[in-house]
Structures are given as structure tokens and as C-alpha cells.
Image 1 (cartoon, protein in one colour):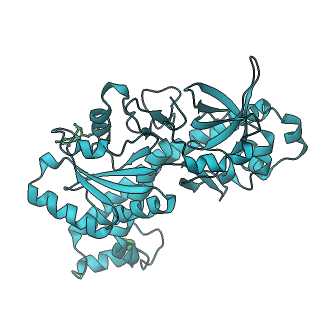
Image 2: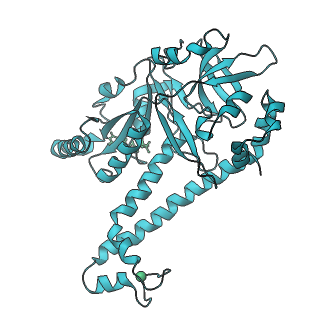
Image 3: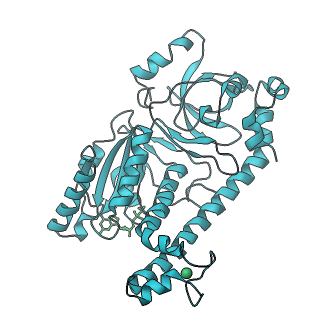
Length: 373
Ligand code: GDP
Ligand code: ZN
């Protein structure tokens, strides 16, 4: 393996110039263990590494801290010594979110993803609002959006063509491909995105065929972990998830739980927007905790009775509301485990840092928000 296989490019080479004579080594972070990181070096060696005190101190916010996908400069420790991140290189692209818990700070989910393959189908999963939202998130990150209209074997040519055209109209810059994980249609076009050093992530609703596509494309080399495990926040089969998988034939698959959550937020917002008119009505109910049943002054019941609101549509709204609650429930569970992990392991991470004394001299705001009970 070489640095190029890992995604290194002239752009990073230039960013690394200040460290060229430092004796440090460039490496890419492939895992965040909370107490340390997993890093891949250019020769293919994987090491556990810890954050250096200066990196920690110089961070203006959480978003400045090293994240999975980042390129860093490592000071390699000898036998029995720690390997320390001495610097983080700038990012070409970046997916971020609000930090869990009370903090309003931004947290980086994953850095330096080059291509995002959005998987959907010409059937009920196709939703232009949700796609627009994906495009907005991907656009903000700086990655290239591609849409895979999967399960093409289940729809007529006319149906596939119509949705394909609609997506192209929605975002003329996005490349769109018809695929089928079952017949193999379109797979060469998908495989073509996996060029040496290119980091590729998949997003899309559950059940659209992301796992089937990845497994078809990559064969035995790498099995997609599927949905995020709610209690560990990690993929099903892995114990210490490697979030970046360098493929033998070239290309890097990004398998990151944070990326998978993007589809959950997107789905919630999209569900709400589809019923914006009903939510607006609900805001006019007499009581703010109106159950929209027999409650007095219910604007929704009044609208249904007056024939202004279709009762079947309203029933759909009630059911979708339950789905949002379900979405929130699973997300909350994951967030709680993450926070618990932070609390339990945070102290240890600080202890592990080589520049510990320097750290203890001044407590940073980051440490306060995340690492103190
Ligand atoms: P994921 O949740 O997005 O990872 O979806 P999966 O890969 O688990 O696929 C969900 C179901 O759809 C599985 O039963 C797959 O066999 C099926 N499936 C996936 N891709 C295709 C396809 O292109 N055509 C057909 N007919 N079924 C597919
Ligand atoms: Zn009401």
C-alpha cells in the first residue's frame, strides 16, 4: 500500500510542506476509538495513535480536532512508546453535525470523502424533497454527488426513465445511474468511482439495496456492515469498526455510522414537510397539547369535518408521526450510549495524552463540554 492508495494527493503533499523536515510521518485516521485513534500509514501499517497536546490546545472548537478521514502528521513512538498526532492537515471535504448533548458546537463526522453515492429506486422510496436535502448536505461537504437508481429490475423501462429524468432535472450536476444489485446492471459504472485513492460513501434509506450493491461490487473483500447497531453505534459484525476500507482493486469505502445517521435526520425533516399544511393547522388548535380527537377547538377535526382536509391523508399523518417518534427513539438511544462512552472513557483519553501536564494546566472548553461528568 502507498499513501496514494490511501487518498494522498499533490494537494495534501503541499499542505504537508511545513512538516516535511520534522521527521514526522503522514497518516490517515480510519477509526475513532474515543480514547485513541486508528491510523493507517503509507506502508499499510495500522497504529493506535493519541492526540498531541498542541493539537488539542490549538483547536478553536471540536470541529478542529482530528476526525476519521483526516490526514495527520504522526510522531512515531519506538517500542513501548505512544505514537502521537502532532498536526492535522486541512480538509478537502467535511461532513459535520451539531455535537450531541447540550453543546451547540459543530463536530466533524468524517473528513475527505470524495464521492457520495445516494441510493434510491423508482418506486416508493423516490422522494424529490429528500434528494434535495441530500444534495444540500453533500454540496456543503464539498463531495461529489452521484445517484444510483437501484432495483431497476423491479420497474419498467418507462418508470426508470421518468424518475431518472426527474432527478437530473433536480440536480443537473449529479450523475445518475440505473443499477440492479440483482441483475448486475450499471455495476461497472458504479465500480468506476472506486479509483485509487478516492473515498466513496453510500447513503440512502434502509432497504434500498446499499448492502446488496456494496457486497456485489466488492465480493468477499469487504462485507458491508449494514444498519448502525443501536446499542454500540457500530456496524453489526465489527467490534472495532474500521471506517475506511482500502480496496485491493483501488478506492476506499467509507463505512461511517455518522453518515448513516444523515439519512435519519433527512427522513424526519422530509416527513414533517410532507405534512406541513397539517402541522400548520395543528398550530391553530385551541389547546397546545390537543390530541386532535374530541378535544374542543380542534382545528384539524374542524378541517376534516368541513371537507377541507382529507381524512385518509390525516390518518397518514398520524401514522407518520409515530414513525418520527420511532426514528427519534433509536437516535436517542445511540446518542445516550455515545455520551456514556464519552464520560467513561474521556478521562482515560486525557490520561493517555503524552502532554498530560500541559493539558492539566488549563482546562479547555472542549474538555468541559465533553469530557467532564
Ligand atoms: P440496505 O438497507 O440499503 O442496505 O438494503 P439491502 O441491501 O439490505 O437490500 C434490501 C432488500 O432489497 C434485500 O432483500 C435485497 O436483496 C433487495 N435488493 C437490493 N438491491 C436490489 C435490486 O437491485 N433488485 C431487487 N429486485 N432487489 C434488490
Ligand atoms: Zn387539534
